[in-house]
Length: 242
Image (cartoon, rainbow, N blue to C red; front, side, top):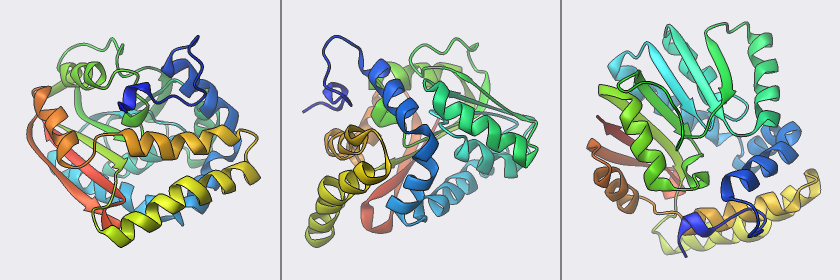
């Protein structure tokens, strides 16, 4: 199954991006808590590692795609860039994010509506682009990656943090059980949208990971591509340059 065909609500009358926006609007108020519970807080360390790689190029203008409630943008702020723009298709998630930014008094981060495939920033605009657990939700992966390449400056870095599938047979078996059974169960208990966390498992399984995803980046002109496995291979950091 192609990842593009995996949708949250399996409603053929609405596009994937509209379903994804609806899903995240539904779970926005519980998202941060559930995220920490389901990942046991490990995702915070993954973002730190991603931003450490991004720091190598000393970016001053950073784009955070699929920013959600702004956690990746907030981590990027530790690099003291001039500006960070976070974009997302879920207004509900960004409402939560903007409140976090107010509490942290982070004035150099701006959250606005935006879809990776149709972002209209000028060519060669951003020093760095990050995407945290968002590329799985692109309606058209190739179109999204191509547009991000267009707006990235030459020499700029694209850092993608995403779930993947472990290769170790025992870890893979446990991970599959956790994603397919435990995650939807916890999601159902704490969220009004029980479908959202079933979609998580389906989208992870269908998404090209590790070398497959590197191949997608290479196909879209990115250079010096590589990936780092995280926590027995259940996630990965993908690094690419223009």
